[in-house]
Length: 631
Image (tube, rainbow, N blue to C red; front, side, top):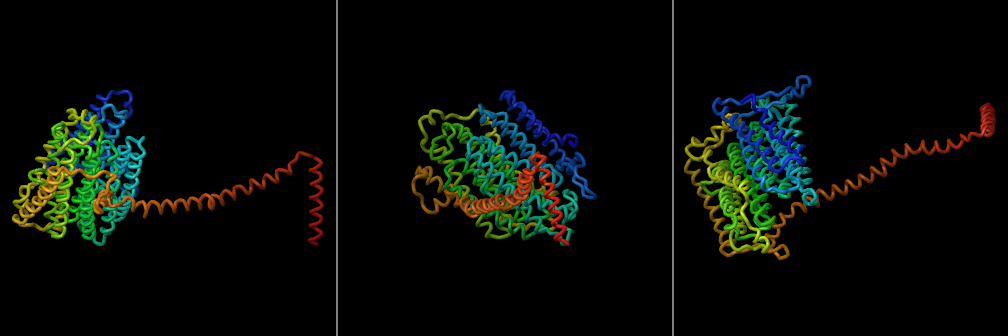
């Protein structure tokens, strides 16, 4: 497979070029076929790479060419496919292919169909580059590339000013995090004299006095921006302005997990900086709870899922912060399945009700969209942590490791799990149960989505059902396939800080507690939104104080606007005036002075010979007078 690894990212890049150049000449079927097929072939090669690593136990290193070489400092353009990146390749290309297939039906008859598929292919290329890079610089290229593609896809319908604003917001907020990542790369290069993983990780534990805390804090700042954690999380809910397949691909399965992948890849650096680990755990848990509280009252179906994504990413960071790297990556995998499913399911609902996204205008869709309902029910059970669905295994593994470090972290984590179960089943009941609350035209239009959209839903529903069994709990981890698979990647961290082990009885007790908590939350949601048929109030009606806070997202955007944007705008305006009237005025004045003086002197050149003789005489007299005065 070593000779074919380079094709994994190049094939989607070829799809971007073909569909980008031929978007006006090719038919929708041709564009969709090319874009989807090339990602599928990349998936096939990724499967081959995975099987090779499984059989040999060795990572695949592919050197493309020598890129940067300055003295003894070298940055090769090369790829590393090991146990960690091979799973990421399967997620990106596998789920990516399903989303491409789904997009054929969802974007049908859109004027920008070809451009949309070109952008999707380009995004997949950069995401593959991010996870395949064997050093931080190649990773950073992919990191910046997915940020660019996110901007293009979020603002795809750019004629809508609010959508264009959401794209700008995502791009700018990600630049804040990217600066931290870039500074970390500089510091890593200065400390280790290399940016290659093979040169850094094996020697990190012996690098006494290395600035691990500063390096990891800067890396975490980068991850905070890309993976939408406090305080850089507000861009992701606004990113729902993009088409629904964008939400599924970028903001559920791939791009937002880039920060998780980067920290998991750099695990030994973080393990050697326990203070940073504590910060990650606290911010991750705070983000999980804060986003869940906002999701409780949202009425836009995609906004509920957006804040759910922020919350679930918080759980992944909690796992990373307590050293449960396998658990965090496990949740990354299962989240790609059930959140991709839920976003695509939401798109199917929106497609069926003529573009409506307000759940207060839905209801009773269970019989009208049966496939969408069953698949979204599976996704909802998975994210709520109900066994035997995938989210149960991964979320409980994180919570168990949190308990081993601090029961307080576990208790707060369980509260977050209860909130998750409540707002997800609230969404399910408002959307699919009761009577239809939309217009007659919408009711007449109700229909199930075409096979190109429902087949990806079914596949993701199956993965959301069985995907958790790769990390089966108990028996001292003997049944945990994922733990054994990723052991070589996390071995340096395990050697420095072995995770505390819980007894099997304690582990099972913690599972029972979290499941019972989720069931209680589901029961309350059932009573309120199904049995009592409660519908959230209209925007014009009054809410309770706490409900109003949650519905308006705790006014975080307004606070940022008042404390950051407006003062910066005022300062920029002041500096603009200083620049225009002060600095520019001085510079322009220096330039204008000779020009104005020249205009005056120019009048002396009249072309009159008599005048010249007169001036000559005046000059001679002036010289004589000067000579006499000097004497």
